Length: 510
Image: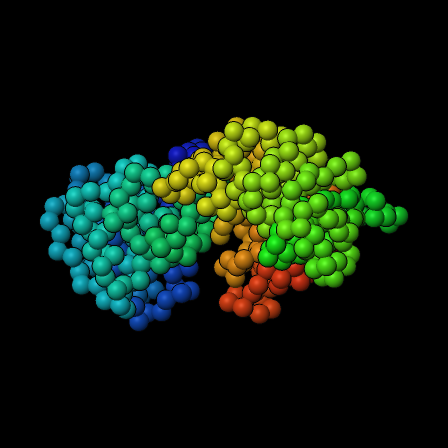
């Protein structure tokens, strides 16, 4: 699913009206109908609905919703702010329709505003400003937003909370943005919905399909999209009946140090649960017995050092390499990691301490192999690119890094995003807060190593691996709840996650 800019979504509306014989007022009526149906499904008539509307089309949507709620015998009041004396044509039409229905709770504000008392049983419908906003709210509108936010009322935002910009809010004023409990977004999500700091502003969000032109959406160019299940299933390679382990690659995992054997165990088990043919785990001598006994399917190769990785490995026997989980940041380890990657000709995944090493040896970043996969969480990324003030800036810097290094980045988080060297960003929809636990990233590293060893390209591996990693998290959460989950539970859930993807895919083809 594409994530278009607010400007593109406005163009999509105009294109639909111009090319699909749809009047803009009818498109607004469709939006209001779906908005009303969603509201009615959630709230009964015991609630009073207080609608705050602007003079533009977002306000027109809100006024149309007020009419439809009133027609269903809900208690409704409308406050429309027309401070310039110029309402959009469709907004004017909906005000007339509202009044023609005998509605008496309409208040048009042109200057002073005597706000209604809002209680915990009230529901505010926020239709003040939509996606056309391009500067922070100020003056009276900022005061109205603060008033709404200070109340105990439930808030439903139409399309996006008033004051929030659809993409970059770096220079916005946070106190001047409506805090919604529910955002009902028209047709497509906004990029801002995927940023952690906006969650308390957007609340729960849901898309409403009002029939915007599919042709326009398909042709529209954007760097942002959400990976969908059918796309992931299409990436999975079928297995030949006569295949043997040599067909599915031999991966090398360099992981673990004294006290950190668990990272190598988790990554190794995840690789073995993700279709790899053979796996060798390179560990310091102190971790040999742990690996040999806990991951019996893997081959264990000892480093020359007792406690940490200190000697690069000959790569001729392998099809893919993963390096970093739990290796530590000893100077010998750093030098060995840099040497290992300088002339690496295999598909490679860098995670955890491998990334931290390059953040302190930045002059060696240029020597990373092209098309390498980097899997940082937020702090690991910032150690490389510098401190970021918000998620939009962080994503922008990650895109710049991917382009500069010609690498793929999996920026881990609630909406993990796969970033390609060309700047394409794929947001991953699977996963849950139960995955916010030590070792979860090690599991992802193992999955990615297995996919690279099997011959998947880096973009395919990133999108498929991130999706199935999150899906395993969802399976584990369903089994035991989010609070009790550990990274080991993700490994145990991987078989079911892979089964869900492959079996559902087979059924859809039959």
